Each structure stands twice: as C-alpha cells, then as structure tokens.
Length: 292
Image (cartoon, rainbow, N blue to C red):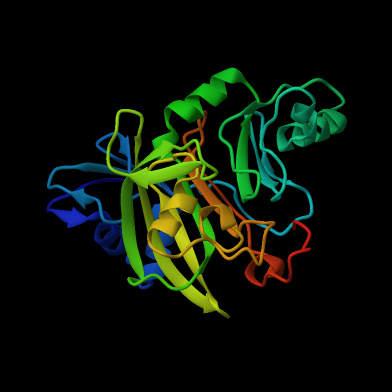
C-alpha cells in the first residue's frame, strides 16, 4: 500500500488512522514486523515523525517469527544465515582445539551432519562464555560482512536478573569503557585515548524474589557492556561476581540475549527471533547449579 502524507504525524498515529485500527498493540506489531518505506528508507520506529508530502509504502508481509523453547539450538535457518541459542558455559568461538568445543564448533558439526555436506559458517557476533542467548551465523563471508556493516540495524534485547532495584525504573547508562589489566576485564569511566563510548538502555520488568528482572537494550556493543553498566548503577547481574555480585552464585551469569530483530541481508524483510527464560534463570538454586 502506498500513501502520501498530507500533514506532520507520528508513524504510529499514521498507521492507526490509515488502517482504522482500534488496538494500539496491533498497530505496534504492524510497525515492528512490516516493511515500511518512508521516502525509500526503511523505518520501524513508531515515534518517527512523518512530514507533509512524505511517501509511505507499507508491505505487511510478515517475516518468520520464532518464539520457541525447542531443545534444538537452531531456531531459524535459511539459505543465508542461522540463528541459534547458545547456553551459558560455552565459548561462542574458540581457537585451536577450543574451536571445535565452542558453540561455533557445535553448530558447524550439527549443520554438516544434517546436510551431509561441508558448509562453512561465519560468526557474526559473540556472547560472553557465561551468558546465554541468540547468536547469528552467516553461511557466507558476504552475508557476514553485510550483517556486520549494518549492525546498528539489528535490535538486540536482553534480560538481566540483577541484585537490588534501580533507583529509576527506566533509564540510560552512558560511559566510556576500557580494558583493565586487573581481574575486572573492563572498567567504566571518563574518555581516554584507549576507551570506547558505550550506551545502554534499561527498564524494570518485575520483582523476582530478592532480585529485579530488567529488559536491556544496547545502543552500542562493547565488551562486557551490560555487565559493567549494571554494576555502575549498583545493580550487578546475579552470578557476575567479577563485577561485584554476591559470590553465592559463581556459575551462570543471569544475562540472556533473548531477542533479535533485523532486516534480512538479502530480502530486506524483518527477521524476528525470541526465546523465553527458563525457571533456573529466574531462580538460582545453589553454588553447584549446572548451566542450563
């Protein structure tokens, strides 16, 4: 569907009016999962301001959306990429013998066994060993480079189970991060020649016993960014004793990359993949708990 706007209006209000929607949630879903072009540029921000005379093209063909607790680590696959669920306790990618024991090695072995032919995978991004969640693998170096070059278009959402409750139920944490030679891998502070700017958004979801469940959105993707920024606001992630959490839980860091949403590098359609949290994530048992 093609429209020409006759006034200044937010994308959300425009969609609600043009499609005669009575449900706000339906309008938000249409914006999130549809391909919307405004003057030729893909826009999925409901707060985007449309100007008078702007051309809006709406394609409501919905991409494949996955929300599953499947035991298989592979949640999405096509001819160009794979999205898989990495458990805590395993490297995203290793070198030498660790390469074959890493999550990359596990997925490569699984794919090659199923296809009965050699398929080389290319890792697009990584998660810390102690963190669980979604990882994208490309099936060619071309797709890997396309995804990396357009990484800002990938919406990455995390769940973090943290000690205490933030003073504000939602907010933005902004600082400069740099590697540290001490046991703390990364430290936060002012700008220095070797530091990188980091921005993290969070919002409070609910109280879980003594802990708080937060949804976290990355604007930048720096090493240990969420872990450092949660510690910065006095709410270290449960199990993350490296960044100040109680040493009662020394194994899985309660951080989960639960949602990825991005335009497909070949088709341009939105790909959305989500996983649910496990009970063991929300309710740490004891120091001897196995990774889940």
